[in-house]
Image (cartoon, rainbow, N blue to C red):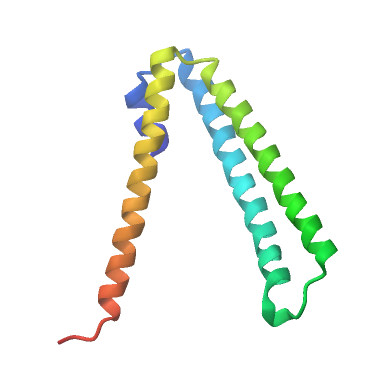
Length: 128
């Protein structure tokens, strides 16, 4: 979806298209890997800080929180590099269009999630 929408919105030329695809896939992979790493660390923090598991080891919690902070800094730098790589092959107008497109797609994704959630809630309600 993103690739087809980007191709239309950005009006990529024949030279830009293959390089854009390669760099866009790298951006998506960076995002995916970062999300997985963060989710794993957050699950660990949740487990460690859960009151049902007794008193957590403060040193371990502190170390995991520092790891989270380092991960977030590293992820921000990796995303910045990925965006810079994409920006190298796009014109200023195309860069702006790409950022707008990403925002639009994110909004659509959130709307779809909200609709799905509403549908699930409606299906759970007993009939009147």
